[in-house]
Every structure is written in C-alpha cells, then in structure tokens.
Length: 242
Image (cartoon, rainbow, N blue to C red; front, side, top):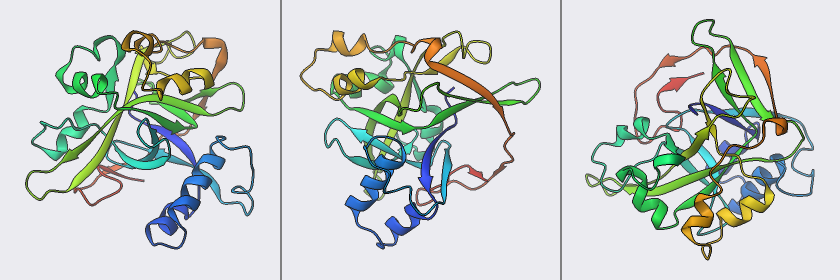
C-alpha cells in the first residue's frame, strides 16, 4: 500500500501535452480543473474525462513545494545515492512513522522536498478473494496525498528523473478491514502547511496522520488485468500494461 491510485484525466490530454499540441500552462490548468483544484469547469466541456490509473513507474501529476505548479513526476522514489534505476519499485511508499529515520527518506524530508500528489481515489485488493476496492472522499472535493520527492541523476548517462513516493500512515476504520496502511490525505488547510517552507519540522510531521473515517467511503470495483512488460527509463507505463 499504496501501490495503485488514480486521478481524473481528459482522454488524449497527456499525449497532446507531450506532442506540443497544447502549452505547458494549458496542460497544468486542465489537470487542476479536472481534479477539482480550480473553480472552473472549462476543462470538462467536451467529454472524454476518465480515471487514469497510476502504477509504480508511471508519470503522474504532483505539486512541489519549490514551484507550486503541476509537474509530472515518476511514481517510485529514487534517493540520490541509488545506483539502480529499478530501485524505484522498492520505494513507492514512505511510512510516516520512520520517515525521519530511514536513509531513503530522511535527507529529502529534512530538505523540505515535499509535494502534493493529485488523486481521485486509491485502491486495495482482498488477497484471498481478489475483490478490488476503491477509496475516496465522501464529499466531492480534491483528494491530495502527502508526498516526498527527489530528482535522481543516472550516473551512466546523466538523465535526470524526478521521482516521488506516497507517505502512508495507519489505516482509519474505513480502510482497516482491507489494509493496515493508507495514504496521508491532506485537507485544504493542511495542504497549505505541507507546501510552506517556513514551518518547522515538528509542525509538518504532525500532519502525517489518518484522515477521519467519516470523510471517506469505499466501493467494490473491477479486478485489473495486467501483464509484465520490460522496464525502461523512457517508458511512461513501466512494469504493466492495461
């Protein structure tokens, strides 16, 4: 946990962005609007809105403490000392309880490398029945996870890969029947604090707790069909095909 989540995306938006058919600013604005972070529905006109599933190795939108704009980072954290690109698969979740102790996360947390991860829901699967469950907020409001990021440099070719991980905490009563961990979900006031460099570490660490169970709900959803594929740094959907 959390190995799979989703965010709202307009069909063809990411490819249009990559191909230069829309500007960087237009792409950012549409991602924000689609996920309820702008008071506007202009991005939703025309249909084609869908939930984009995110798995380790895929690019997904985040808002960093440095730029405070939408950027696409890779899901799967790589600390600067990592030698193997494939290490990202081991670093998708940072446990809140040990984020100040574990070498993988400690330096990035101390250097305020925090981000908000844009989402609409996260998913868990019953290992016995294989039934899959979707978890989101009970009110129609943005779902933003606390995240930690790092820009990893491949020493072999100098390629810079911006990467992130979801910070997790103990599950609340809504999630606990399915998993003992859940993402740290931040409400509006907490989001502003998470991206405030001036706040001390104690205050920031205090934000890493479960959201109330009453604010969430879960539904059954379809199982995923997936197959392995070869991992490369240039692939935007590493590890799985859907």
